[in-house]
Amino acid sequence: MAGTVTGRDCNLWFAAHSGGATLANIYTKFDSDHTHTAFGIGDFSLTLDRGTVEQDLVGQVGNYFDQGSLSADGSLTSVKFAVSGISDFLLNLVDAGAVGKWQYLAISGCVSDATDATYLSWFLVSCQVTGYDVSMGDADTITEASIDYTVMDPFQISYSSPCISDA
Amino acid sequence: MAGTPTVYKGDDATILIVANGSNMTHTTLAISDFSITLDKGTVEQELVGESGNYFIAGSLSVDGSLTSCKVHSAAVGNIVADMIDGATITVSGTCGSNSLNFYFVSAQVTGFDFSIGSADAITEGTIDFSLLKPYLVSSVGLNAEHNILLSDQPLSNPLK
Image 1 (tube, rainbow over the protein chains, first blue to last red):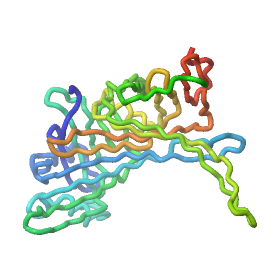
Image 2 (image 1 turned 135 degrees about the horizontal axis):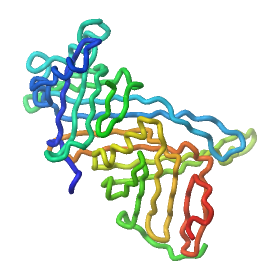
Image 3 (image 1 turned 90 degrees about the horizontal axis):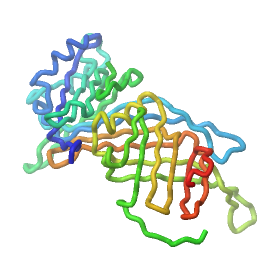
Image 4 (image 1 turned 120 degrees about the vertical axis):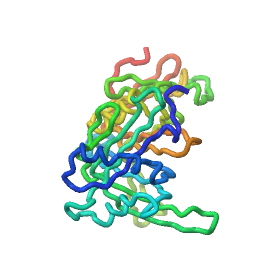
């Protein structure tokens, strides 16, 4: 069915960067060492959440609601992590708040068939790793890391077709 | 109120969503499931000396969700745009001919979640929405075919 894509039609980039980095500097980090292939991504999700504010109304059959704040977070699993792959997720988690170090994580990606570039894409430069869980099983189980992240500047998020961005 | 009770399936439904200035049908969005929930709260008053408490109708709220596999700027992208911009979308549709119709203009997208898996998994987005003005929702009426329309707009004879 035209317009439908599967997981193979996806590209992802991840790169830890220092605060104040220019977009050009971040772009240069999205090389072949920072793709979904380099990290061995098993699954990826991004969630945008728009809160609602409720106002009680006297004399009405229901209350009034208004738009609340926007937040964004997500998760992924990686089977190539730390020194066997690229350690950007760990760098960002450990160095969070350390000015001049890897205090931010940029996550970018897109889904697209090979002929149409107007599918959804995203470029989020203010991500913070909030959870890093490594699980190990038996010899039949691949060791993988489950990683949660949150966008630290959701108020900067805008949509310019077809890209969701906080830059 | 007499009519002929009819069983409807998913292929009898029609859904139209207006977002970011674009009219999108269920075909445009490739919707795999759709739900809309009307919730009327109840208020409980405890009663001393009685074998049960007293209940009365509370407030009305309306929300729902849908799943779309057209993760494209011309489909899901329009809904994401209005979510980020804090704009409402219009959600309307019917379960089938001579069935329940709905037309809600104050729907706010409250959640957008998309997940990407392997080559065996179709990438799809899940969208949650809530009505910002549920207190305006009413049953706009029946016509000769016993259609009923739920709307948060004060439409006059919308089914005629």
